[in-house]
Amino acid sequence: MVGKIILTWQQHRDLVSIAKNSLPEESCALLVGKNKGKEVYIADLIPMKNSDSSALSFSIDAQDLIDTYQKVEEQGMQVVGIFHSHPAEPLPSQTDKKFMEINPVVWLIYSTLTDKSKAYIFEDEIKEVDILHIME
Ligand SMILES: [Zn+2]
Image (cartoon, rainbow, N blue to C red):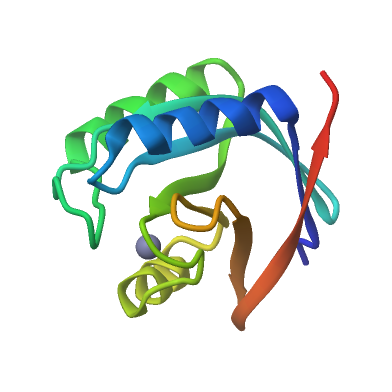
């Protein structure tokens, strides 16, 4: 049961920059770190190319994903979350919900419209996860 995702304010600012620099398209990034009980700690962000080039959806090229997961594992880390941005409210779309079920890590969504972030995870059903921003 994951209840909280913990990232630094700097990481938050970096994600906001990734999202704003990708406008009008959705942006995405992999969140690398560790699961400690109910908490997920983010150590690193890996910006990924949105191969949909879309303002309504995102996807990551399969080979890009395989290569990145391999690099992360070689560093003894784990992909513990997926970040993407919405030009709308930070609520999961139907497509997001489908992929959350397939990939049950924390999904962090940032809204370029409202400047708000929300996080979710699929555990039997989609649940909201608290976000905690910390100093470095
Ligand atoms: Zn989405």
